[in-house]
Length: 167
Image (tube, rainbow, N blue to C red):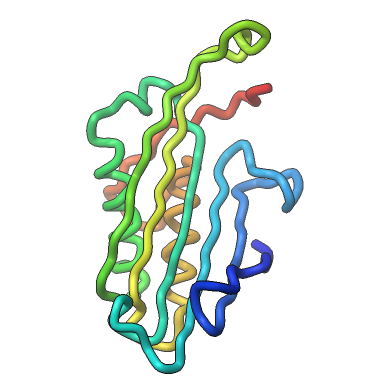
């Protein structure tokens, strides 16, 4: 995990983190999973946020193509975020987001890379406390679960991860 430049036009104050699961370099996306976590702060509060803080995050991981075709994949990814935040005791409101399944096929010079799949989760929520450690930990747990690492809670299924490097 490393600090990255935060967006400057969304709030008076912001900090941004990037994380890769087993990265080879911090400036390149991981073969297992990558994500961004941005904490926005407006001391005057924001009616749109419902508070002074707002988290905006992104998590992405490659998958086996068959898993990418699962009709419940998006719901599972969203539930992992909610469960990770709840397990860490993160208090929040106004959660929103999207889960995107991406299926790709290579053609021409890229034909030998074959088919592939990815899951992307983009989410935001308003923390109800100024200590956001539980929110960062929950996001980190989500990123690891999307990348296929064992969850920290029992009874959660893993997605199979496509670990072959795509050119």
